[in-house]
Amino acid sequence: MDIPILKYVVSMGVYFILLLILIDVMKKYYKFATYFWIATLFTIPLWFVTLDGWFRWVKTLSVIFPIILGGFIRIADQERHRKGEVWNFLRKDWVVWFVYGILFLNIAEATLKDVALGNLGNALCGLLLCVTIPFPNGRKYFKLSETDKSTFIAYTTVAWNFLYTTWNLCFVYGESPAYFASSFCILMAAEIYPIIKRRPELYITARIYTLAAHLIIRACFPNLFLNVMNSSAWFNPEVLYYWGLANGILIIPYTFWYVWQIHTGRAEVTFFRGKSHSAAG
Image 1 (cartoon, rainbow, N blue to C red):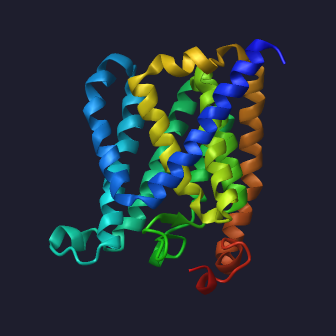
Image 2: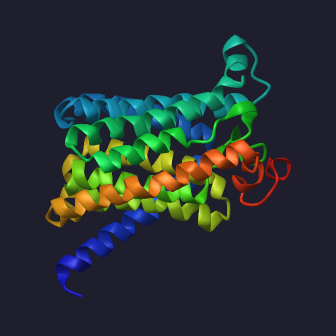
């Protein structure tokens, strides 16, 4: 194995492992997680130097502020002895719609950027990913774990998770090819962590934490990833075009399947990997 390839293997491998550890720490220590993300706001002065353009600012703020609020929601749910209007408000059912809305916004932001970049096939995939996020009605597909430190869990399907991953990778490949290798790590960590834990409903939580960490590192140390895993040389416009086209095609049959599951009521079983809703909950 030559030196350039070895550099990518080592840097990406180390980053991947650190992300898995980060997810586990954030999931287990809900108070620490909340205070940690609050502390990241003190790095905002650096962002004025490093963040370039509206998308970077919107992307970073639309992840960090919600993850902080999400931390307080976990505290409110976990520590029921806390009284007051604010704590009671944080325990109401709107919180699961909040998580749903942030996920929807995250995809929509990148979809609009895909349209601006002319990656229309991938933009179609992003649009239909928004459409096929399971609704959180009655805390059915989105909820706070009753046994795992009030961790957010979401019963997205294996196919949806895969389509989200390939869509997001394609988006980064076209929007910031230099950061494709590092973005690959955060997406793979989100995919692998639930497999390791044998809890597929942790995919969205894993994705939230890896994305937030990645955005903070990019906002504070933009050259770090460029120095150790710059992937700009991997970019090929034909690959981008056909990748986006493939994603746009793949999401169409999934969308029909999703609608059929909802219409027939089969989602009560299929979205929970073969278990009934009562058993999964």
